[in-house]
Image 1: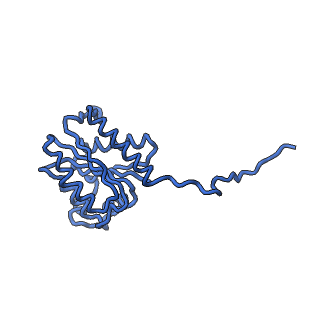
Image 2: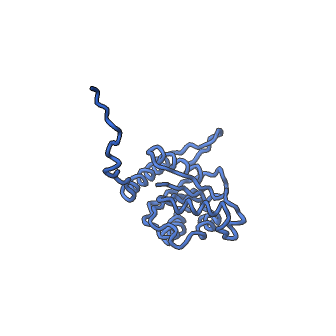
Image 3: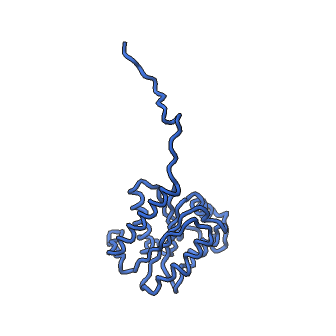
Length: 197
């Protein structure tokens, strides 16, 4: 089972991507398989032309199809999520998130952008057939302090909100996607036993 984070920021070193990477690292510490899909790495021409046969687009859509949990992150521009994210989500089938758990994440310079998560992004995730949309996380730009050597420091209470979201994802994955019990044959030890004479 894979947890996929989709970064809808046009910038490869954006605060949005730093936040997503932090959440993925918290989940990886719990032994969960994680992956980051940064949309700027996709072919821009193919994305604009909605060419789902282009290798980078085809691979990205395949990653979404395999994921059971999708974390969708975006900076808020003009009270909405980015056009880059919109272009990618438009390539998904109508039920592209069917059976998946989704977590909306956004970054922005002002709390005035907070509602964009609920009136812009959340409805799209629900329209894609998401099984459950978890409570959103909004990070103010000033709460994500970049380090000169790379990475970021997350101020409280953002750090606590991100930890709570990671915990919520882990809890949902345990309930929705439990690891199957091994079969009786798998439990049976087939190694020959040698008994000393």
